Image (tube, rainbow, N blue to C red):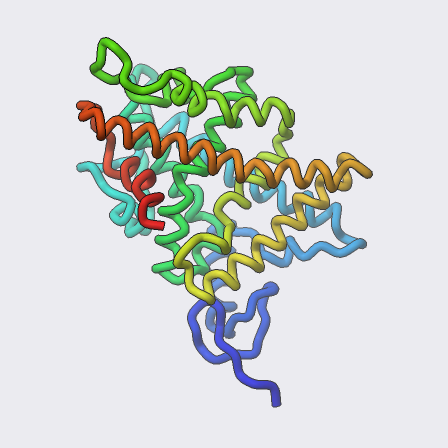
Length: 310
C-alpha cells in the first residue's frame, strides 16, 4: 500500500489526483459543482500532449479572453458599490462585489479611478480556479502581493494597444496623483519611469493579445510569493507549469525556431513589472517623507504597503 498523503487544498488524507492536483474526493466534487457553474475552466484543458496541443491552447486562450472581456466591461461601464473606504481585507471578504451601471457623464478623478481599477483587478483574480482552490490565508497573501502589479501590467497593455507612450486610466487621467507643490519635490525621471518603462518594453516586444492573456495569469500564479503555505505552493506550481506550457506552445506554434527566445523574453516581463513596482513604492515613500497632502484610498495603500511586509 502506498503511503497516505494530504489533499493540497483542504489537507485531508488522500492519494488521489484530480485535474493534475493531489486532492481528495470532496474537493474534486466541490470543483465540479461550484467552479464549473461559475464558468471556470477545467485544468484538464491545460494538459498538453503532442496530439491535442493546438486544441488545448485554443480552449485556454478562449477561457482567458472571456474573463478579460468581463473585466474590461466592469472597468469601463460599471462602478463598484462601496459605502465607505474599504481595505483589501474587506474587499476579499465579499462573496460577490456589487456593481451599478456607470452613467455616461460620470466624471472620475485619480482617487476614484485608482480605487475602481483595484477593485476590478481583485475581482478578476478571484474568478480563477486556482485562486478559489487556495486556502483562505494563502488566497489573501496572493491577492495582496499581486493586484497592484497585475493592474500595472493590464494598464500598460491598454496604453500600448491605444498607441500611447505613458500609463493612464481609461479616460486619460494621469496614473500618478497631482501634488500640491509648486516646485516638484519628486524627480521627473522617476515619474517618467513609472509612466513609461513597462509600456516601452511592451512596445519593444510588440506583444500580442494571446501573449498578454497568458502572461497576465502567470504574474499572479506564482509559487515564489513569500509566506504561501507548502500546500499553496504545490497548487500554484501545478497551475503555473500548465500555463507556462500554454505560453511555450503558443510561442513554438507562432515563432517556430524563435519560439524559445520569445518565451524567455515574455517571462522577462515579470522582472520589468518588479522594477516598475519598486519605482511606485519609492514614489509613495517620497510622498510621505515630503509630507504631501495627497491621500489615497485604503485599497490602493494596502497594495503598495504589502511590499514592505515581505
